[in-house]
Every structure is written in structure tokens, then in C-alpha cells.
Image (cartoon, rainbow, N blue to C red; front, side, top):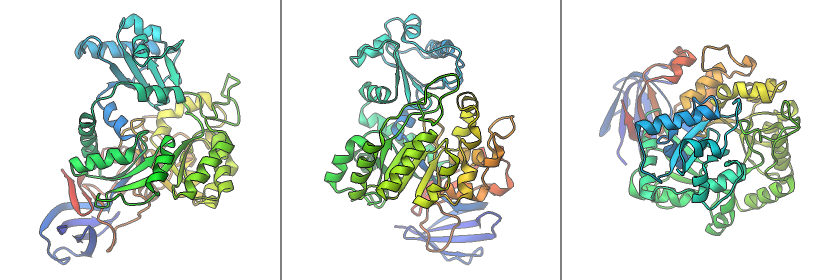
Length: 485
């Protein structure tokens, strides 16, 4: 492994100008300009700020890379408007007859009308159309798309388990094409300072990433999450969370074991103690407590740390109770609505809160409607931080873009538009938000792994809006330059 000298960088927020010498993938020296030593390769930081490399702790990588090529539907204000966006896109970029039309990003929680397969049939008679919601918990299919996967459905709007199983049955591009898309997405991530992702794809992530690494060097480290249906396979392989996969140069590791307790806010399937405004529904319990604990226990006994999807307050209580009863460490993914008494339990039980701050400004209006009266404890990042809970930030891409700076800005501002902050009592300090986006690293020191980002401007000098657009000068992963501006 070659050595690298990073010249003229300010180490940390408001840091002094220094040179940083990297050897063997780790930081060997930090000294004043011209004093750190020589190296075979040099990188000029142009007076920028050197920080730990950024980590996205929750990504659906293949879906994110595919969504970047789907019809964008994030601006849709109704089911009818969604169809108009699809038609406008196809008018500009026609597809051959019979080819599956794919769109992504709609949020129907505030729509005045309901999605239905008949709307797609009237607009595109006989054409297979599959539209994914932004949270990936709803799949809207045309009659032809339903026929394509051998299903019948009264509305064509599939939720939760039906959505995910149908997604797996839709035609997909060949592996080499998908791997090319993933490579493009990772290059874009590296350009934003990302040096590691945790991949929550529902496939055999270990096999997928070993194949990708064999084809092309990766610009990021990858933690390969184990899907529920692959628990037995992972146990048979002897995989344990944190293990480095053989022949990957330390870039690929075994991730946690993923389980779902409930659904999502936008789909109104997050499992809550109270009922949704104007309904008698409490949401959907995907995994009863007994079954949840049984799976967590088996995973833990075999060295796999559970990562439990829980969004509603009742779902989070069930997940925390399960961690207490099983007595294992782990993570709760999302933790969007919490009972006040459950906030401190994360720290007491050693459970990581893996959250996605960019979802809060995206979902504030939906939360105000469907979680009316509860929003003082929704997306409670400030309360979790003050309680000493370990927080890790992610995007849940494609639910939000794979860009940690967006998460950081949302966490410290609680808004992403002209409106005032939403529940500003839940803001986090910049330093804490940076650590949550850096795998817990709070600075750069000799001996650290050389996963680093150089920003052209000190983040502490920027507004939240400025942070979202912060220029990245360079990214270094394992001592190797993966991006330069």
C-alpha cells in the first residue's frame, strides 16, 4: 500500500494548518506544513478542513442506484398528478411497447385522491407500469404489471410484505448492468465525502458485494446486512457481524441482521400506541413480540447483531422490550416516534439509534396530519442525544439522497425550506451531527484509519443551507484517493 501526504489542510473544525502523512492505510503523522515527512503521492488540500470520512449507516444500494434512473415522482401532489408526470416523462423519452415503466419517489400521505391500477390503465392501456413510493413500503402497479408477475389485486396498490415480495418478482437488469449503476452511485457518494455505507438491500448482499469488488475497486467500505430470509444461510456460512470477508482487503464486512416490526408513516402502517387521526387504525404489527424475540435470540447466539426496523412508538417499545428480554446489543432503525419514557432506554440497553434526519423535513406535514398531537416526540434526535444515546445517521436511500451533508443540515436545523424549524427543541449540535455521520469519530488523530474528507470550507462557518451544498475538495478511503474536485 502506497503512502500519501495530504498537504495544507486544517485538521478538524477551526483547526490549524497542517500536513498529514498516511502510511499503510493509517495516519502516521500530523505536523505543521512541510514537517510531517515525505510520501510517494501528494494531495493538496488548498487550506480546506480535514475531517473523518462520512458514513451512511442505512442504504438500499441497488434500489438507490436504480432509482437514480427511474421517473422522479417526488413532486406529485395527487394520484392524478403522478400519472401526468409519468406521461410527460414518456412523451420526452418514449419506451418500447411492453417495456416495464418504472417510477419512484411518490408520497401519498397528503393526497386528496387514492392511487389505483385503473388510473394507470386508462393513461397507458396494456402497458406494464410499476411506481415505488418514496419510503419503499408501497408499490403501485398497472394491470399489465400485475400480470407480469402473475398476481391479481383489487387496486394494484401493494403495501408492506406484499410490496416487498412483488418488488422481488419484478424483472431486473442483469447483474453486470446493476453493478455498473452501483459503481456510478458510489462514485457520486465518494464525491460527497462518503467512505463507508451499510447496505440494507433485501438480497444476498455478501455475494453481491464480493462480485462487485472482484470486478472493480470500490471507493467505499461496505457493511453487508443480512436479510431476514437469509438468517439460516448466514449461520451456515459462519458469518458474524463485524467479520471481515475473506479476500476483500478489509473493505467488506458482515453487517447486522435486519428485522421489521412495523411499516412506515407515509403508508400509515407504522405501529402506534394511539390510532391515526380520523381512523381507528394503529398501523401494522409486522412481527409479533414472541417471534421477534425468537429471531433476535437465534441471531445473537450465532454472532449476528439485530437491526430492528421500528418507526411507530408502539413498535419501538416492542423492539426495546425485545432487546431487554434477549439481553443482546443491537440497533433500532428509524426510531421516528418514541414514547417519552423510552428515549433513555436506548442508552440503558446499549441500543444504537440509527436514524435518518433528512426524513424529518420531508415528513413534517404528513406527521402533523397523521400523528397530530404526538409530534413533540417525533424524530426526537435532540432528546436522544441529550440522553447519551449513540446515534448513527443514514439516508435510507432511495428514500432520501445518499448525501450525509443533507442529514447533518437537517439535524441541526429541523427544516430544509423557508419555513421555521419544526420542533426546534429537537435540534442537535453540529459536532454531534458530524460524529453521527462519521461512525462515531469525533476528530482526526495519529493512528486513525485513513478514511477522510477534505471540505473546501470549514463546516462550522456555514449555515444549514450552506452545509447542504458544501464543496468537497477530496475524499480518501483506506489511504487511497477516491475523489478529487
